[in-house]
Length: 483
Ligand code: GAP
Image (cartoon, rainbow, N blue to C red; front, side, top):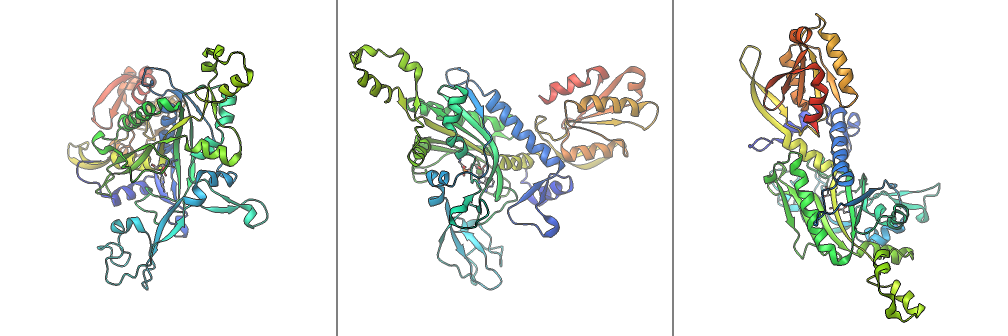
């Protein structure tokens, strides 16, 4: 984002014009809280998810003592046994207080805790409840879970829910994963996937949607080490955003106050971002110390033993203290410090929220010289090269003299490794503008010197610098620059 506050309407217009984000079912008037990603948006969001998976699951940064971190992944179903949501507390408590406005022509529905920041539908210069015509009801509790029915009968026994978070699939599979992967504490299980919440007031573009994607880690550790891991994940997750181009001044970790904490949470840090649509930083991700709450809940509700047995500690233990009494030995084996319910640190990020932050941060307007040297305005999306939907564009300067053939060969070669575009339409300046608007970091031009001397120009989207590179080095150069 430029230093001046970004006008969200401009960003929304660009996202629609260039195929990043569309309103869902737009031709039917849309549906509030649901969004579709177009050809550019799907690449951007896929890159975000791939980079998260690569940086957090395949190659997480070394642990607090320099140790290697063990991480594995899962991909769980969207609909689970409804008892999962009773155990997790979602059926009983996943709700927001809702207020209706009875005024004719308004009939607005608001979250009670957001009245002061929600514009009145009849008089948007005021907030809900502030206009003299407002007739607000008392707050009512509204459960955010989407209900459905599984099977042919639509009765109470068939009720199921679309998952409101990916986390519970991880907890429900804790034993399956630890038994099948032979992972030892501490270790993390990660999941990327859709979640659904019937938000009372979806708003701020994709920021609060009813269908969205999460990127969640449940990191299981020994209770005595949990604070160390909580701090580790807080730092790792905060820093990650800056490595991908978010200005670190705008990424603000905020430790929740005691009064805000969920009853089971020992500590939670919200990693917030200064989105241009708000004067207050807004949550990108929550990093929560959840203690033993979730596994204990699932043990109680399922009747299954999800405690962790520390085989290594047991092997090392001095068993002579039990004096050969097998019963005592067995009892010791089933108790701490050998058997215990692990604590959990949960970094829970939103793929769509981060995509929106990346779009806001990337949007810039500046001026560049056209072919005649005259300054012209451009919109440029300054995506980090790892996230850019298109990594490079290949232009033959003219559609003759052997240039298209070389350009097409290069395009086909690059296409094997990267998402690239071939563009031979119009003046070079116009082709640059098109790529700038979708944030392509490198534009490669095939010109007379390519035909004669075998070199191409690579133009950098941000510095506008153009440098000559041998054709045979282009793939390696692009690889180096986007990794
Ligand atoms: N398992 C913990 C959990 O779900 P959360 O704070 O409710 O915690 C985690 O959600 C993240 O999911 C948020 O930080 C946000 O990035 C994303 N998220 C939550 N609700 C969302 C919504 N309605 N629209 C878009 N993203 C949402």
